[in-house]
Amino acid sequence: MKNCKRVVVIPDGFADLPIESLGGRTPMQAAHTPTLDRWAPHAAQGRSHNVPETLSPGSDVATLALLGYDPTTTYTGRAPLEVAAQGIELGVDDWAFRCNLVCLDGDVMKDFTAGHISTEDATALLAEIQRDVATRWHEIAPALGGAVEFRPSVSYRNLAIFRPDAGRPFPFDATTRTVAPHDYSDRSVSDVYPQGAGSDAVRSLMNECAKTLAASETNARRVSEGKLPATDCWLWGQGKRPSLVPFAQAYDWGRGAMITAVDLLRGIARNVGWDVVEVPGATGYVDTNYAGKGEYAAKALDEYDIVVVHVEAPDEMGHEGSVEKKIYSLEQIDGKTLPPILDKLQTFDNWRLLVSPDHPTPISTKTHSRGFVPWAIVGSDVKGDGFATYDETTGAAASRYFPKGQDLMTLFLRGDLL
Image (cartoon, rainbow, N blue to C red):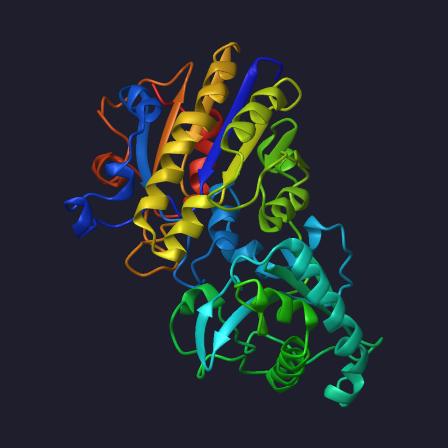
């Protein structure tokens, strides 16, 4: 595969709905994207659904599908994927939960990122919770036994791991229901705290965390600096250890690498047998190093046969409801991330580039959607469909449609696109 290269660029939450302030256009259509516009007529285009009706829309489910895995059989929860990103081992009976540091105002989700809390502050707060709360787990849930660990990660995105005593598994199961905090921006969460099996213990744990956070000197300093405090640990996305067939085995393809700023994608990469290439200045936010992601991806093609570049910024801007910043993030991807990748790809005999969101994150709803996403593939052996642009409209107009998003990967790797 020395001269057979594939790159996937995932602008997370890229797709959207028409917006009145943009004259009925979507952010994709309103953005100035000369790179995509130049390549659009040469691209095979289509649309796919990456989130099955039986699963909640999110990057965990949607990215698995986009990378060619059936989420209905491989998905066990978001948190276990992120655990893998940190090299943490999960036992067969362990459960992992995502632990967001959030800011509640009464029962309203004021900010699911606690003001995009710094990793330094988040790490300090998690250390306090580990010291003051996790050590008292037997007091909080005496009937369950076992132990709880709080693990810091990046910014507001952290982890809680429940490890049971031998022969005494925790009661969590398919009836244990939690919700993603980003689905409730500026909304009441009074009715969406964890429910179902084992939820009483989880809610008690969250309550104890809130007490520690209220007394935290780190939070007091943040408030004095005009920043939002992290008032609560929101536990969600629970699951047990996943088992994914390595990508090289599933698709008979060579070495793979992932470029991302978020642990979810790092975890997926490691679960499918790929390396993770770290880019300095990659933040998972609108201020990320767009150019660096493109440059590092181009360089990685000398060593890897498939490289996936994930950019979180459009999704975050969708959650914030910022039309201007979402457009900005799209323009940065087009102007800084894509050009070095395309330049490098064209030095190989056989190459293809796939650009596709994982799911829509509409400005109007500020949350993920399971609607279709448009995709575009260009390459050395691809005959374009002739569309003048690449956006939601052209994706819907194209003839290629995958109701099961995982089927797109086979087409991308070696399908006939002439």
